[in-house]
Image (tube, rainbow, N blue to C red; front, side, top):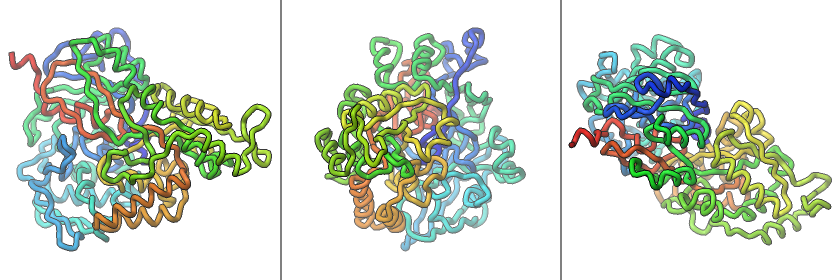
Length: 535
């Protein structure tokens, strides 16, 4: 689980509260208030903001960064299409060489030409251990990148890595700017320059990120001239601001989105996702690290009830990071809700009910804390439901809320109601989530899960391009999670968005866990057109 996936980095993508004065809210042109009916402006509410706006530090690494383009991009059907490359790469027979021909005539937003040198600089910089690129493991297969003239780039791999082309949606940065400063702390991290459809107009941390249409964009200047992401951490506040007109659109939990069902001026979009909610069971916790406790919780939890009551049907039960409707899901690894079975596991392992009904073994009570992010109603609801189910089996879970600054130092020993998920290849999410080599590495492997069988299968899965061998490897991972679940996966959550019905061109993709930062119906805002312009 990467920092982007947990914090909404989007990086994980981090929390901030929108705090606007009444005067600011009445000034649509100068604040993170709604666009006030302007045909060329859109303001949307999201839950988190990134730590940085530099791809060299992870911003937009999965595409849709607005400011940047990758060599490739993903379309509405999650198929790769050319972006800064003029075509999909030419791949050598041994799967070790990827050759990209670059699009001609592209410039950065400052007018400087884009060339192969910028691609080489970008990839070599993120591979440099001195760069604070939290997702470097995702590019483990990449051995070298070199330019052939100004218009051709060759990337060489250490081993065949089937989904490598999907990694080349990483935004390309200008060497002439980023290469002249400290990539970790320089001004480029907050004042970036790219080739994308938008340029950064302003960033008020904890409040809003504003974008302005790039008149030099190689794909044509967008019709939406001003695009603002208002950072509104609290779900209820986001819904209130949307209702009052301060926002033109927002991501909302399903139960809050229901409140807009009768509003004919707004439209609801539901996106399928890989976004899961899970409880980390820290290996270093005497209770949560016990395999019997883990197995009991895995079947004591009523996932279907969570989908029906908490998500109002907008999602599905989760038995691991892979959704049950994915081709990569290992059939037969579904776990039934079986409270009697959970109690039996605990009885046989020596966890006996105490006077208050909470189980005890060798003087240790079956109790531990579970943290969830303040203001995140969906996580709160999942945490409370999970604790309720656990108590029926004799396990006491104390739910507590806090910011990530409060939660992160406690992750080694305390459970966390976390989120994650990346569409596409199973390596994208399973490797950082489960490999012991990344245990405790920021928001990677938060539970510090350590299973040699899983470690081997994860390596086998990423080091071959044989689809049969890869399926076998990831089936092994999922079966091992049944035997020793270091996480209790709860639900896969569909993302629900409510937006003013004023534009054409809105669609959704299969989304990751990023809280609307790069996804949502505005993933292609540069292609929107106002409905009023067609009258």
